[in-house]
Length: 148
Image 1 (cartoon, one colour):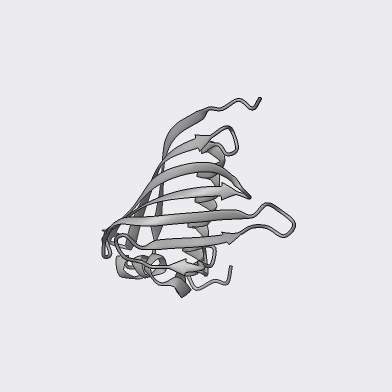
Image 2 (cartoon, one colour):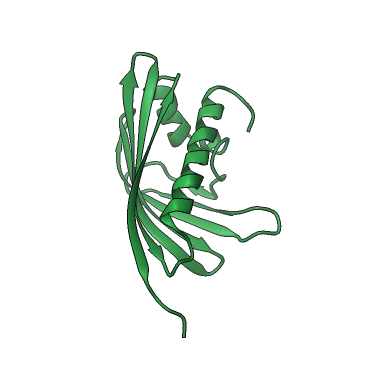
């Protein structure tokens, strides 16, 4: 019998971008802009109650399914969404994420907070935090106009 358990965790990652809050917000809100640094969505409804859905993964690796619902959107200031992440047919986590965009003299400070439930050891908070950091670095390269 498989042992069942959950691990709860919260992590916060901060990044500073030399781009306006409007530009950083667009990178989250526009499906073409977001596809430059995040999985291309099969469904993308950027509105409160809207869904973002994507499936993909590395060649010959597992297929991950990201299924999110936008809970709150304050243009150019805050995005709150809840999401599930599956690996194949296995649910590996359920999370609530808050993205805050804070104007700075040189651009935007982004504060990314994730509160997650990691299921049965299929994923860990440490691995998710690491992957999210890489994702936010990709966002930075996209904002700089670099190809990813």
